[in-house]
Picture 1 (tube, rainbow, N blue to C red):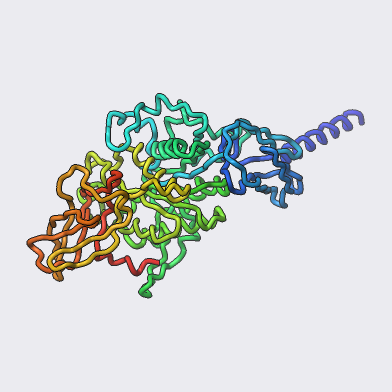
Picture 2: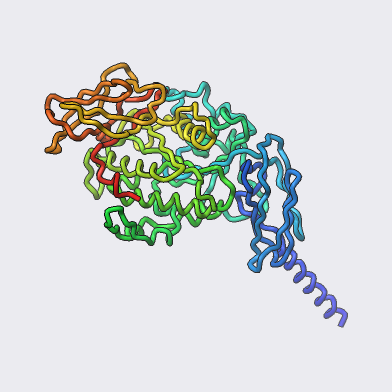
Length: 487
């Protein structure tokens, strides 16, 4: 009997121990030591615990409580906070207690896309001798040491919760080597102008199409154009819908963000996508905004760089105009509220390079969009010239632009390049283009009665047309077939 009693007590102890293990608080990978929390917004903190257990979150003088639901999930919202560079602890308590250290409050952004967003700092460091754009004074991979810039790299196979709560790092040393160069330099520029902590989350996969970044059910739609035309369901294009959304986006929802930076599209251009891509990107923007319960969440994106798609050995034939047509489809996203586009046609050394360097300038231009549009620094010019209509004056076309900054200019002082015009027959000829009264007047002796104008309408186009702030003009065609049908 004595042995039986001892055995029963042992079994009971094991059972109770197991129950306590099951009751432990579990946090998502993105909530951990060294993180940055978003200022001026309700901040989501979430995880799981035992059913019905009271969970208390304490941080910066706040204490929030909730009860774990039937499935164990819980979430609290910290009230809006001011930015703080003071490292503080967060305590999350239930039947056990987790203490997270060295937490700051500032601005948090998510950067996502494919290889040019994933392009790591270790690669960027090899190109430090390149000088285009706002070249940094030193190689940041060797000198970065700002404890107020924090980074979180989403690794698709390592997003399961664990007991270490390690994931966020100071943007320096070994952790910075694998981090997005564009994302880091964007964070660096934001900190330089805002003087508050900046947290950057990078979630990008080389070669990825846009479909994997969108929840599959969101793509099961047939977009209807303004002219009544209905497209086939977006899921018809395949592309592993939802694959990276489930493993690399869902795990960071609903971590409170200031906004999103997006750099993707080369894979879609290889597929000769145009209007369908525009609707996919619109779907991504709207669905992510719904996921984060923020209908005005800013989305700032990069218009992909010049590249010789026509020379690619691919199953689909390409012309030199496929890329401009894709640029056009990307630009349609500017019709959505709280969006902005960084143009990088000038940041290419060779159109044979799908992954051009100068990510320090790509990051800076993304930051300019945020500084102007999100943070209200209207004195910062954030775009180069963007087409805003034409006026036909006898044998010339007068082209108007927005985002002219302090004036239109030629980067090298030479005549503007990559303009062409056409008459009613639709045949385009290279045209002379001159800046006059902050507009561009275009003409060609080959076209007596021009009706259309195009700029940068070639995959190799790297024009000298800029505003005086040095930002390049966006490619366009006045006969854009999608302008009045996209909605």
